[in-house]
Image (tube, rainbow over all chains, first blue to last red):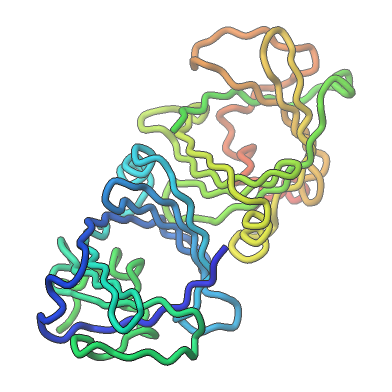
Length: 159
Length: 159
């Protein structure tokens, strides 16, 4: 088990483009009746099964996470037969900036138009330098959780 | 992925006792909003994460199943923090009878008093010899699914 601590931002402009390594992500969720998130992900040609929860007594940026690699074929079948729809389709651009690894998710499909930048911290109070291409912080805004976006695509938001 | 095909029976009498190897099972479920079952199991000192669904167009005895071994510590934490309550606590007695592997689950806790025998088939139409200690078949009765028993313990049924 890992505790995932991450901050999430909207993106400003286009100056981040071309800086990162791009990988195609597809992911789906099985909606649960409690606070747990069950996610199936295909990242490039690798499959993963992930369970997440809000860590007890913590804010939205700190989550208990259990992730396991699974056979790609299993992940494909689970997206087809077990996961809810719609699903998340995005290009993840991974780059190092200011000594930190940033992930910029450029959404496609029903979430087209949305681009989010995430950085993973080792401590919730860790100070980080913000690149010029990050905008408003949305770490605590549940609408930007991928699990929320799967059920409430960005294209259907009231902009 | 495996297709799980199993038949399930109530137990008659006590003549099965002492025939099998006993292992303690604890398992919990994360209730989902669709047809998928998400199960965390500790069998002896081993942890497993399992997703199951009804196979398309099939009856209750044939299920699509994805099972992965996970670290025991992860399974313990998931039962504690992610899974719903109550949870399943049982002794599984595994034995070979008539060339088939039978599993006899003797439930404890809220399901005390219930004993079920299961046999896994390679084909839904496979003919099997039934031991004298099996009673009524309950393969198609959803009440005997462990995922149902977790939420509706046997001790609360109208007997």
